[in-house]
Length: 190
Image (cartoon, rainbow, N blue to C red):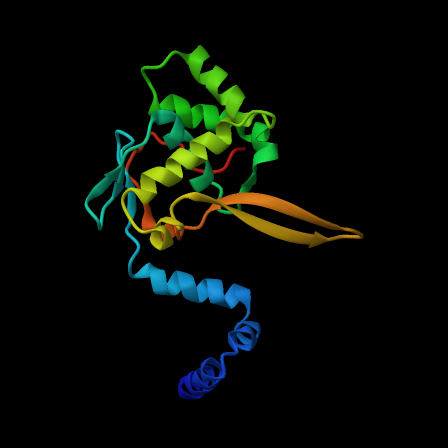
């Protein structure tokens, strides 16, 4: 069967009909194949006891400030994704992560910073996500980095009407994430 798929793929490519090939494969399967192809090139992300983010297989540390680490931990804990406009629902969890990564900071400053992050009228969350993206792009090519940073995923719903969830997700397979810290409350909010 694999040889037949290869033969047909080559015929479509020779006829310059990538559109038909994409339609036959489908976008969801294409994304699964992309993940499988990248899996061999992706590094494990180790979060150490002192909240350092290390790409273990590349022997590199991702340099992030505590607020960026807190945002990243929140999105790691929610592989289903989070809409930015609903971040206020995650205020307590985000505050918890921030307090863990910035133990020396004043609690009031942390809470003030979190308020800006969860405010849908403030651009703070976009700025933090841009900084996270930049940190990963400094260490690897854009193709691999795209699995590590917080990116957009739109989910279409049809229930009497059509509406879209504009989720932000980290697509890194979670089996590549290793949390060493015993204190880190890594998981869903109650």
